Length: 440
Image (tube, rainbow, N blue to C red; front, top):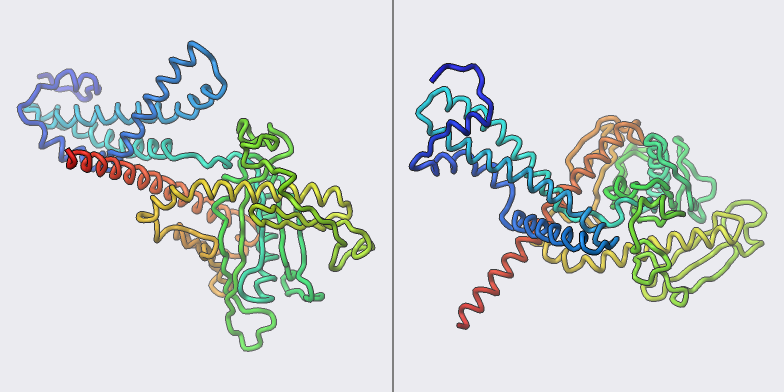
């Protein structure tokens, strides 16, 4: 054989000679790459590809918008699976060449195999991501609800900092943000901190850009602060917490929602955002607290109760009752939509508990710590530490790094949850088959 400085992949395969026992090499080279894609996941991908192919056939005969939307949803899985199978096939072929008697061919195959295995690992991750069910609200705008948690007045002060932090972060990201509600605590008087923090009772920040929910959904949870309050004379560090809720927001127009189909139609009883007026109790009352002349004189405040769930929303920030009513409807739709989604996911969550119990995040968990004395912000899920607290609190690049790490953690958790669910289904199916065989 002539010495050549380079041989293309196709030429290498063409020169391959069948060997009597390539399996040992195959096991050694490809096991690690394949291990990242469990059989249950691969089976799910192939089922979805079969569904995609069947839908394309039916669509060619009779066009249907819903079918077209489903085909679009499955196309990423089909593409990722095709790429993964091609890489897996290349690994198998190149591994066979490692047993070639030609030393130069073995070296070329070894080099190509290393690159292909790296590609296969990346493609395994991409296929897993494509198989993960997308959050149905990810493309929508969102509402951030911020309330003080344990810690008394100090938690109210920090709640104000968290509200301002997210508002400035929206400006940093180029998002449009509007305060729907910004209510001070009763009885706090004119108390404030040296940093200009006010004793916040509750705030609702509306982020109007499509995709905002997908960006901010990882911010939901308890945010813990460790610092020395202005009123602490002995210099002792106090710990308090602030609760943050992230809700999908139905936008003012369908286009602003980034699409979404009929399930986003507020007039459709099948939509998560639909509210039956007969199930709502709406009360008007006088606004309370410090403010202009309308306070305690006009009934501009609105309190809305969703009777089936007991969800209560109150709005009084605007002097116009019509504006408060509109904002109350918006917040109520978001809260009820999230409750309906959570109810549907309870069964799936139970299937995942055995795998994700120690990682599962609830509203009572402390997801993040802001430590003033150490100039540190730590996300307890992703494990990312940032030692630039001032930049975090003004919504700068340091906060973006934290938020992005939480998004990555959520994506990884979603993949693990989906894998656990598929494995649970596969185990249940195997158990059912074994039971039927034993009866025979």
